[in-house]
Structure formats: C-alpha cells, structure tokens
Length: 303
Image (tube, rainbow, N blue to C red):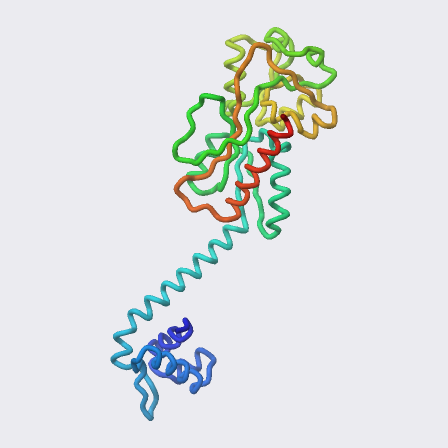
C-alpha cells in the first residue's frame, strides 16, 4: 500500500469521477485506474464502482473512506511536523550573560558551525532573569548563565554545570594592583571600580563584598565583555569569574591580567540550561553536547 493510492481515491471521491481526478493529478485515466485496482486487490474490496459512463466511489469504498482520510491526515501532520523540525533545526538560539563568551562560547560555536554548516546559531546577550523567562517561553533553546555557589537553581529548567571558578580582580598589567599576589578590600577600594549592572550575579557578589563601603569612583556596565574592554582602556578594575578572564583574547594579548581576592572563598558556577518539558531540536542537543565537551577540555587545560 502506498500513500499516493489513498490520495488518488480521495481525489476521485472529492471530484466525483475518475476522469476529473486523473486530470487534476496529471495522470492518464488508465494509469489512475490501474493504481486503484492494485490497492483493491491488496485489500480485497472494490473501492470504485466502474460503469461504461465512468467510475465513482463504491458503497464499500465509502465505508473505508473515513479510514483513508484519517491516514492522509496523519501523513499530512507528519509532513508538517518534519517541515517545522527542519526549520527549527536551522536556527539555534542561545542566551548568554556574556561571561566566558570568548574562552568557552567562541570555540564551541566554531565547532558547532563546522558540523552544522546549514544551521544558524543566534547568540543573544541578556540578563539571567530574561534568559530564564525566554527558555520557558520557547524563544531560546539554551541559556548560558552564572550562579554563586549555594544559589537555588530553578526547578523548571534542566541545568548542567560547565565551569566552576572564583571571583578575581581584573586589571591592566600596568595597574599597581598587578604587583600584588592577591588584592585586599582596601586596595580594591582605592581604584575606580567597574561594576556590573543589577541583574548580573557579579553585581550581587560585589555589593556583598563591599558591605556598604564605597570605591573611589565607580562605573556601571552591562556584561563582562564591556567591563573587560573598559579595564583594557585603563578606566579601572572590575571583579569577574576567573574563567571569564583567563583565556580571553585581551588576557592572551597582555592587555588584561587578574589577581585573586584576599580572604575570599566564593565559588562561581557557569551552567547551561534548557527547558525540561519542551522537545529539544537535534541541533540544540548537539550544541549542548559540544558545550559539555568543550567545558571539560577547558577545565583540564586549567588544571
């Protein structure tokens, strides 16, 4: 049994004659009739009633018609689902809070692109709350976000830990703080401080670290990447996870360096999140796997 046999019968029923159906389907009438006869022999039922004046659906055929239509509807749904899946698989949307976008994200996207040349990867910078909301709404496939050790993880998304690090002071190599093996609070407060805006994990950490004390001057910026650029331009120091600084092109070129915070044992986690309930397109699953593998290599390289 072939799908086109059922489609031919549906056309004969809809148009009321074998001749009209053959014209619409761009087939010869004998070819259409023979195709239907093959199905009739297979089923053991005369689906068409053939007369000298033409052929139309038989009474037995009408009884089978709801089943035929049901099969064709199911096939049509399958085709639409496959088309939708193909469309979705050609676009993967990743939300990121812009920490470790260069050391981890860029190599991951490069590998993904090599293996999926027809799939577009859209990287969207956003705050953690927005990424979480977009994952639940379905407008993002994956989310790359940070947490402080001990934070509650949202139960409505699946979370995979990628990297674990410590907050560090990010500075230029010619900054006086670079001469220290670790940076204390009094030293940090003597510098203009570049702080992440509210809504970022490092904003919460720095305000907890300062305990109400004020730096000599402060800037507010949206995301780690802009913070690193501002540091490289000599505007001050910032506090970021070590995995966001080490391996960054600015750090590799000598424009940035970092020092640990004296007396601080806080851990920062970078995690990859996806919705728990929704079906995940294959391309997004593949990107997830590359992230996990690249993160393991990143941890091994750092020792």
